[in-house]
Image (tube, rainbow, N blue to C red; front, side, top):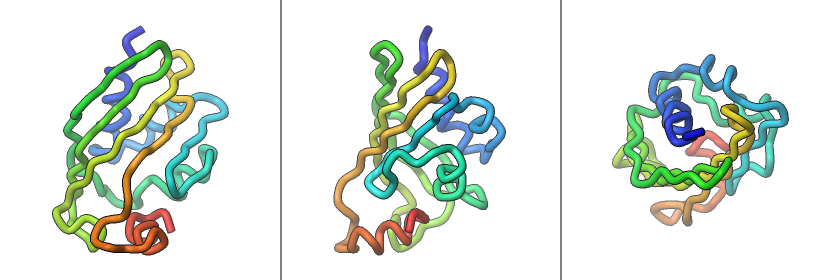
Length: 130
């Protein structure tokens, strides 16, 4: 099964603010991990990571690679509104997505140090994770 297209649809759901797609395509036991989140579950993921209003304008994929049930994605995210954390309205992340069949089982997000000398706490707060 080519999971790369399913992975891309996950990001398109953020662009379109399509929460129902995400809700319907998470596997049982889904977890989300980032430098701010340690294996949080579905409910906490939506509370902390799903924006109340459309936030992501577009994702440009630098790499989308599959190895078995895992898909590695590197992307440039373009935000709808600039903020202190992302004054240019864009940032780059890398994520490792693990699937159970066609359903998303886990997401591990990787990013570097906070921009502009922000502390990790300030960066978390401005990114919506604090």
